[in-house]
Image 1 (cartoon, helix red, strand yellow):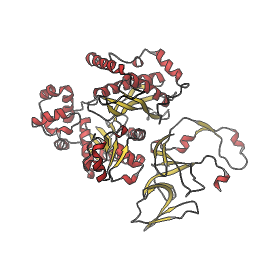
Image 2: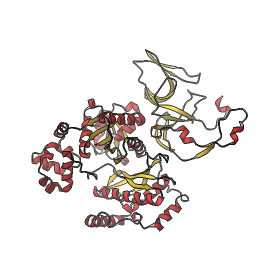
Image 3: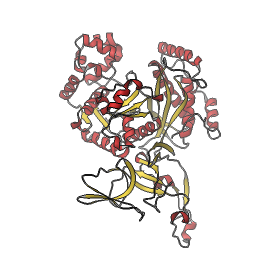
Image 4: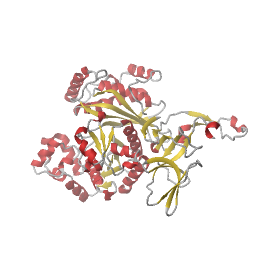
Amino acid sequence: MYALADCNNFYASCERVFNPSLNGKPIVVLSNNDGCVIARSNEAKAVGIKMGAPAFQIEQVIRRHNVQVFSSNFVLYGDMSRRVMNILSSYTPSHEIYSIDECFLDLSGIEVDLIEYGRKMRSQVGRWTGIPLSVGIAPTKALAKVANRIAKKYPELKGVHVIDTEIKRIKALKWTAVEDVWGIGRRYARKLRTMEVNTAYDFTLLPESLVRSMMTVVGRNLQKDLQGIPTIEMEIPEKKQSIATTRSFDRDYNTFGDLHERIATFTMLSAEKLRGQQSMCRRMMLFIETNRFNDKEEFYANSVVLKLPFPTSSSLELAGFAVTGLRSIFRADKHYKRAGVILLDFVDANEYQPSLFFNSNPKHRKLMETMDTLNHKYGKTLVRLASQDELTHKMRRRHLSQAYTTSFNELIEINF
Amino acid sequence: MGKIFSTSDFDFFSPEMSGLELPFVGEIACGFPSPADDFLQENLDINKLLVKHPDATFYAVARGYSLAPLVYPGSILVIDRSVEWSSDLLACCFIDGEFTTKWIRKTDDKIQLIPLNPDFPTLEYSLEEAEIYIWGIVTSIINNNVRLSRLQ
């Protein structure tokens, strides 16, 4: 079984932790420069504020309903996310941080009452951090996602829903509109609707060959997952507010060089997705952790949110920032078991106005395009960064020796 | 320490768990030193003493005098949200739209917020009017610069 733990209206909830008088009031959080809405509390959704709405367009609604408006405070959100994820990781030997506010937990081998287990997670996260959580539990990731939506929608479930029988699976899928299924984009949803496929359940009944020819193997995998056959290992592409790449290692890593290589690779993977959705990011978060279940060594986990001097989607630039961040949280003499990179605070690459002084190197854009095309054509890692290569000992050592002597670039804000 | 949030009463920070370990020299008896203290017994990481649950712990910088001389402006409060409240523990609570730290006493029909500074009154609320949210428990207070002139 998998659990999907998802923080409710995460950015808005973070603001509420430090101002409990906002409970029950409509809140919106705006993107950088207060451009458009990137998060809404339920109350703000109820008064009709749409995701992505430009701030100037909703001024009237804001005044009429006394909506509390916040500029995004990514330092806070990053810190709260780290806390939530740390707590969740104690509930499973294997978890996957999916975005800044969502985490899949592999519950195989955990033989307890799953509703109780989900409630325990939820209450601990709530008490320790103040962040409300919803938990969906099901045999596959796509179904866990569906279960999570149900948990959010029906307060009487107290934030937890488990799909553990065929009857519950079918009921849940019939309840889910096809456009609300994880990974089915608006375009496919429209097409499916014209074919009288209105719910997730209808989708699971389509012939396999049809799904495959219409939506490629990605669609077929999704269909299998919804049918209850665990298929989805990797995430499903969708336009996101944050992009995470996190992995557990097959062995313990203890040198800076080893971790650097991993972080560079994760940055590369995230950056590729970032370019895939035509975004640039203004912040990145990194985290590293040792094995929580190792009795011989004290558990160490740390993370850092970097404010980048300019928005970028260049793997080269992001990898450079990632090293700086890694240096600030890396401790020698530890055996690291997991690490991850989360890109956040996005701008639309096509709408971005370059600033006068600090900008992403424009030459990188063309270079990255070429790299993505080659990798797409010839396999994931044909073209990669030197720091990703196994054989760059020289480079690794150069970075290592700099670690304690160089000071941080002033443009980067370190908030552990 | 990274500042993560500011309100009118507190600046909130998030703990950073560094590995600073100092030799622990035994208890300070405020009298003459015990001969046993000649042996450095173990290393003590002050973070571990102050922060038992890093994921549930926030630091706040205090403003105001209601808990003087225990807490004064600039004192750093270590707040642990995982600790269960009891009337004996110092609570960081949210009342009337503001954060404050007080001891809380509950009776059948009212709630009292008890300060330490005798110049400040005990605040009393009836159960109906009080909307008190206990945000966390102040588990430690860090005072720098403990000067007599400042405490009196």
